[in-house]
Length: 449
Length: 171
Image 1 (tube, rainbow over the protein chains, first blue to last red):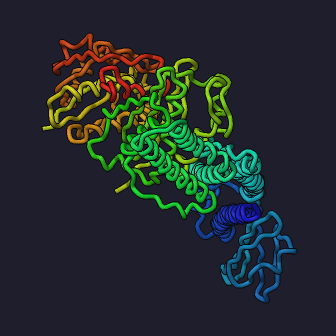
Image 2 (image 1 turned 180 degrees about the horizontal axis):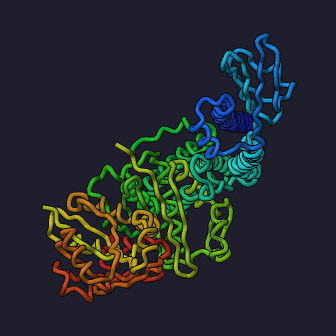
């Protein structure tokens, strides 16, 4: 802020100096013009007076005397000198100006408000000093008015510049202060808060967006770390239950070797699934410490959806997925995103299994399309929906909507999926209508080749 | 040669169903689609000078509508050379005929079950006006029976996906 103030005061200073210089220049120019013009007019009148006194051009002088306007408080004086250079007569002469008169030629000077024009003349072997004095009405009245006007304009101008600059400074700094105020509210307890991007414009909007993106990453890492154990137990529980169930069933009575082989094969598949999930969860946990450790590679999203279909059917054979691939792009490269296969599979299979779980027909509808810069996945169900007032809490770990008490679950799948999508710089949004169903939209940035 | 087609729209994602239906049934190989909406500027000189087409188009097109257009563009990359929005700024029949002629539009695609749902100021139902003028405009009029999506959609893009006539897997 101090730099802002320094810059502002420097700018105000420059503007004030410029205005003062400008005003001074105007005043000097006008005054200079008023002086030189008035002296010219006095010189002219002095010459006419000299001609009149010395009687050199009688006709012209009479004409001039009649038609040339007399100046304000105009006075003429004539000093006549004798052969010894002594003053012979001094009509209307003010002795106090004697020192200022040039005794050899023409001179102009000013005493108080009076302007003088004098000159030395020789006529019939005699020497004369003829002068004329008058008040410069323009100087004494109009210029004084102009001076006052300029001083008032200068003061008002400086005042205006200062006030406007301070207001501009305030309007510049206000959004920054607002952003600072909003940022100060953030803590580990409310990492879900975001800066309002739409309210700001230009660079500040960019700053708010960048800050929000950073918050997304921090929140994801923080939540991932915080909920790792819950996520791990939630994700590992399903394959472990399958393994225990199969083993329990196989050991419940004596079976043929073939039946034991089949049971072991199923246990093997579930164990592999378990291993994949463990690896994915470990990766998820690692991202919390260092985002760089996660190596993203180009992944085809249609393949991820097809794999999720198999994974979901493994969890519950009653679950169905109906895929709408009618709007797949002609260029299959548009379906590629930079990401981790295991994590994306984890996120999508969680969302799809949720959609199946909360629908009466246990069916999830999955659609896929590609925009210019993103891949769009829609996962929809015709299930129980989420109450509108609870939609804002669905990303909170362990939160379960008020209408799902008859369904088993931990409230972890959706926050986990959202964290994974955010980790891929994507966006997950949920729209739901109670008793009609829920639609989850995932937008992931596609690879730019 | 590129065939320029005009499809009236209210800039709702559901209105893009007509575009999809047309692209699915047409045999033309190079198509340019103009999605046009009607805006009646009237005779006010103030409206005429203060109206900015680019700004109005930017304002009236939602994010989902633009994404929907992009999805269609990606789907029909080879066939669909260009798809963009435009405004028809008068209801006047001569203006509309000249607009179609000037833009060299060879085909008008209208939906038999069109539902206009635009409430923006100055906007009017271009589809309805084109239906009234179809004998006078001089372009080929192609009417498609496109089922309009239900109103209970939760996500606007759903209008493009999960359409009734599209077979899903496992069905």
